[in-house]
Amino acid sequence: MGACRRGCQVSPRGLARSFAFLPLTIGGAALLFPLWWMVVVSLETPERAGAAITGGTGLTLWPPSPQWHNYPDALREMGGAEPWSGFTNALANSVVVTVLVVIGTILSSSLVGYAFARLRFRGREGLFLVMLGTMMLPGQVTIIPLFLLFRSLGWIDSLLPLAVPAFFGSAFFIFMYRQFIAQLPESLFEAARIDGYGHIGIWLRIILPLCKPVNAICAVFTFVAVWNDFLGPLVYLHSDEQATLAVALNSFRNQYGGLEDVHLLMAASLVTMVPCILLFLAAQRQFVEGLSQGAVKG
Image (cartoon, rainbow, N blue to C red; front, side, top):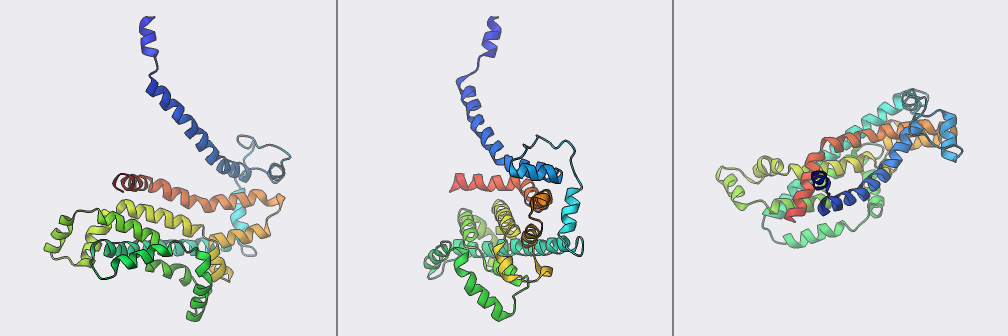
C-alpha cells in the first residue's frame, strides 16, 4: 500500500504540465470545430444540411448516412454547362500561379536578402529602411496603379499580373532571409570565395541549401496566401477560362448559394482547402525548425 502511494504520487511539475495541456486542448478543439462542421455538412443530405444552417436541427458527430457523392457533384457543378471543365480549368490556373509565385518569391527574396546581408554598398541601410517601409502599405493602396500599369502592358485577363510581381521580391521574406543569412559565419563565405565562387555561385550553392527552414516558411506562407487569394484574380482576370479556384468558388457560391445547395458549397470549399493542409503537413518539420531557429537566434 505504501509502495502504491509512493508510485501513484503526482509531482507538482507533472500536475502543472497537465493543467498546461488543458487550455491547449480546448483551444485546439475550438480551432478544429469549423473544419469538423464543414465536413459534416458536406456529407449531409440537402434537407439536413439546410436545417443545420438555419438552426432547425443540430448536427450529429458524424452523418448517419454520409453522402460521399456530394464531392463529385459539387466539382461537376462548378463547370456549369460543361461539367468538370470549370473546376479543372480553375485548378490548373491556381496551380500554375501558385507554383510560379512560390518559386519567384523564394529566388528573388533570397537573392535580395543575401545582398542586404553580405554586400557592402553605399545607401544599403537607407534602401533597407525604405524596403521595410513598404510593408506598411496595404495591398489595396497599390492595386489601382498596378492595374493601370498591367493594362498598359496588355496583361489584363492573363496570369502574368499574378505571377510576374513575385520575381521582384517580397519585403517580409527579404527581411527574413537577410536576418538568417547575416547570422551565417563569415568563414563560410571566405571558403566559397577561395574555391572560386562569385556572388551568384555563393547564392545558388551555399545560401539556398542552407536556407531550407526559411525556404519552407516562405513556401508555406506564400502558397496559402496565393492559393486563397481572391482580390487579385478578381481584379485582373475577367474570363471564366482564366479564373482561379477562389474566383470559381465565389461564382459557384453565387449560383448555388441557397440552403438546398449548402452541402455542395461546403464540399467544394473543403476540396480547395486540401492542398494547403497537405503542404503544411509535408513541410511541418522544416516550418517548425525555421520558427524555432528564429526564436533562438533572433
